[in-house]
Length: 441
Image 1 (cartoon, rainbow, N blue to C red):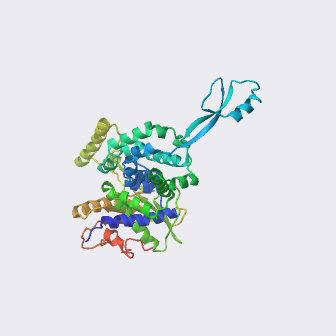
Image 2: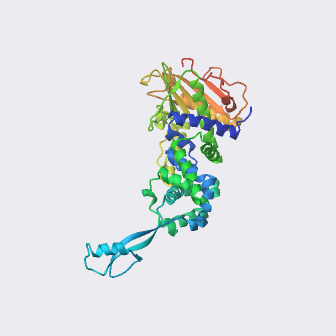
Image 3: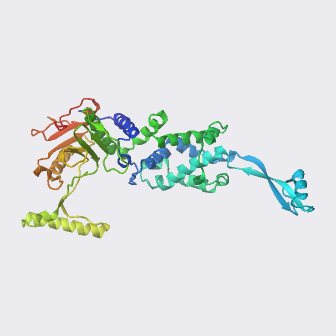
């Protein structure tokens, strides 16, 4: 079977992601975790967007040209009026001096009203520039510099980060513009920067406007779409992208069954929630949901077989050594894990009665060996899934779905109808098999 191409994978995720984020039907925190390219455990989608923005070629090129361009920074020349005593600073404003001497300083010929020249840096286009540079600088220093991947050092090598930090902290022109934290960019400022003659300011406008639209979720704008596409294809994160693609396609298939994706609260644990006339489905990614898959080692306490004693010894020694080597505590277990995704089907919105469960493993591979390992993991999850007792003991229909990147199999459904296999390329079809969906839905 054919493997899913990288282009199709990125396009598939982006199309669904744009729709779900725009409609508020997917958990932004869960998406941020899934698309986190940094290993910094990011849960804030806007923070992740800023990182994507700063990794873009246009931002890097803007920073590279910054030092030379700042030599031609715009200023406004003006004269401040100042009253002096016994000295003259700048040009004397004689009409004002005369009024002063005949008014509040009557008869005092040592008082002067002077026009002191002043160079103003806080003009509109400079405020836009300073705000943009602050966004990039803080993101690079707080997030990007901590990323330890080759693609980071290609976009932001250590010497480029140091160069930018030096410019931002020490450039005399930038220093004379007010602190960026106190700048609130207005439309008037943006218009001034957009119509400026210098590329420094027109480029600053273009980038700041793009950043603003990125945070606002203008994913259908061509430049925003291209930015996301270029930074989604991070080699180290392709397996995670593959997982999102598969789950999004499953959500689309369920939606075609009459189930509707619901707006989801920001702090919800679910990735998504679907509702029909009778059922509510909670969808979890990289979480066990309301299920537990942990079986404590104490379950073996009453068994005195030699193999069991040895297994207990391994677990206890493992815990002791992990604490000694890493300082971490572990829970000795007979089994512990979680599937890649969990679909919990409830009888109503109240979620009082769990009636069906779909557990899923996603393998970004066409290797039969990886398929075999995934199938074994799936069977363990089905066997040990618990909610106030093992699901298998409570007659709750528990199905397993294994998605691979094109493993060739003799069949895609087990004889007992409990385990299902879907090659990822099949998910591109709008009408891929729905055998994995419980008949009651």
